[in-house]
Amino acid sequence: MAGGERAPLEAAWREAGATLEEDLRRRDAAERTRRAYALDVGQFARWAALRGLAPPDVDPKVIRRYLAHLSEPSGSTPANGSSTARSGGARGGAAPATIARKLAALRALFASQRQHGDLLQNPAELVSSPRKPSPLPRVLSVSETTMLLDSIPTGGPLEIRDRALFELAYACGLRAEELVTLQTADLDHDAEQLRVEGKGRKTRLLPVGEPAMAALRVYMARARPSLSTGREQDALFLSKTGRPLGTSDVRRRLRTWAARTARTTPHALRHSFATHLLDGGADLRSIQELLGHASVSSTQIYTRVESARLRSAYARSHPRA
Image (tube, rainbow, N blue to C red; front, side, top):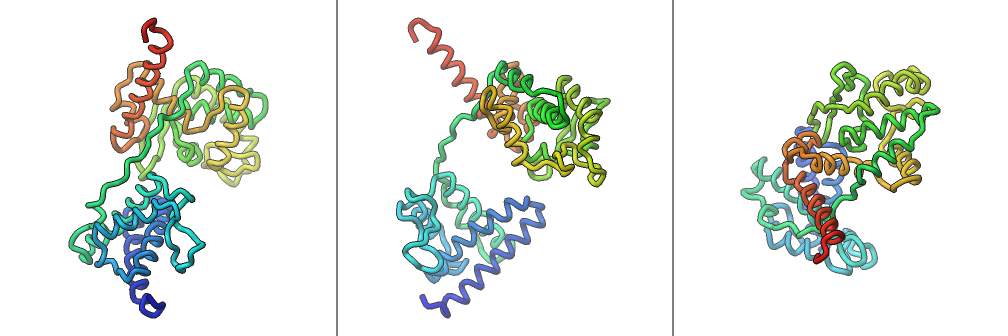
């Protein structure tokens, strides 16, 4: 199709994408989500426009053909039609998780179109997501976690900060993004609890264990004042230059300390928090609330971790395993 013939189609797709962006902003979707949806929708729009398709022309068969196209080893055809550029992923084709993400973006796009009266139905709702492998999360044992946290010294301000940071991460099962957005006002010393704003701007109140509270008190009294430049009085955890920490800082500092014990990540600490609660007898609903999961189905993966651990123990210990 010639460029002049594609122009009206491209304009229609741009308008549909802009409408979705407005809807996501109105729902207070995270910037990262909006950016990912824009990229995925834009890729599909270019593919569809090359084939002479406007938003109302898309049906489930078209979407299935697009997803099959993404999974092909040769990759997908780029917007400029060249045979060398590729937008479908790795040389072996897009992974199931990538295809599922792109389908989710299309569902959001056509749901927006239907909501605004531009479509009668959402064609992407009739397309099944590919089955994604769900590997068990990496989990530290209780002894490994204790060894890791106890290995962080408390000599200088940065060491004191790191001890408080990772004690709190494990005590509350926090995501890296949640750690770096904490404010000093979020910590209630008297009630020994923490206010956390998680995904979807949902707020939850979490109990904080005594070891973490003790580390935080030391940090607030001995380390944070020396890190603060006086310009930021809100962020709980500060860098050596006085700015709020970023998620990359958290991951880098944890790698530093974990190199001496068991290699891990901030999210593995979160997984360990949940698994250790389950081992201790906590019910899934309570763990769901503590983690800030929207659905208990997200929390059920920890029952698989527990089952895998029991099977391993059985295989090691039973004489006729």
